[in-house]
Image 1 (cartoon, rainbow, N blue to C red):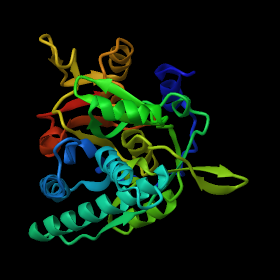
Image 2 (cartoon, rainbow, N blue to C red; image 1 turned 180 degrees about the vertical axis):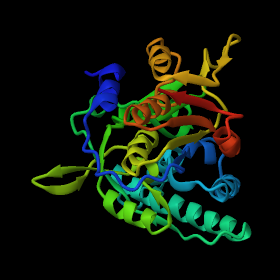
Image 3 (cartoon, helix red, strand yellow; image 1 turned 120 degrees about the vertical axis):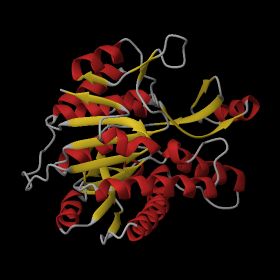
Length: 332
């Protein structure tokens, strides 16, 4: 069984196929929006989700106004968890496999983000087309997460319900908030639609791609086949950022800064850290698995593939973080 360090080192050091260099836009930025940041798994509603999306897109419109060439991606943890919970409660229809549920959330959130950002750009007097690409991502079929799922998704369950689900073979984890389903989260290797995404960017579109980390697929006999998993959106976002030649990779989540000793009396918020410092803190166990650790890991992957800056901050601090007054910056 592979530990984080081996899977992580594979992500950081893999000599993935690098595209031929596009004409580099030094202000290109990939923004990854956390699924948990726009929908609280326990008390979220469609109205709250849309409100958070509208606020985020208002911030993104200001970033575009500043001259950044923006590409968007997003998570889907609460949303795909809700779909699974509805399937469990209904019992009247056949449940859909996890990759299909991921495609559903990619379309749903892509629609909401696309419409909201289009509206915010219109309000700001910016004429720019926004489009969503339903994106497949090839994953590592041998990743240890298929044997040892660690990716939490969806709602928290009470103990009696969680115990019944675990008796049925559903993997769960327990933390201070309760029980939550975990699923495989293999490493992303290649974005299937990357050439189309680059053409759309070249045509001056603001593209939303690889939503929810992308639909996980593998190749069998040269053909694409879906697989039951959820790809971490930050790792897929890092791959997307490298592939489109971004200078900055901005990860938006529900906390303003990365911290050491998070949630403890001696919590220390970090303004800027180097790759070597981040690796040391990760090995010391400062970053939660399934939460902050993959964000830091994806930031490191982006920097190691030639990115200039990776930034982690909250939804409402996107523009200040780009200007250096908020968030945690990770540099070489």
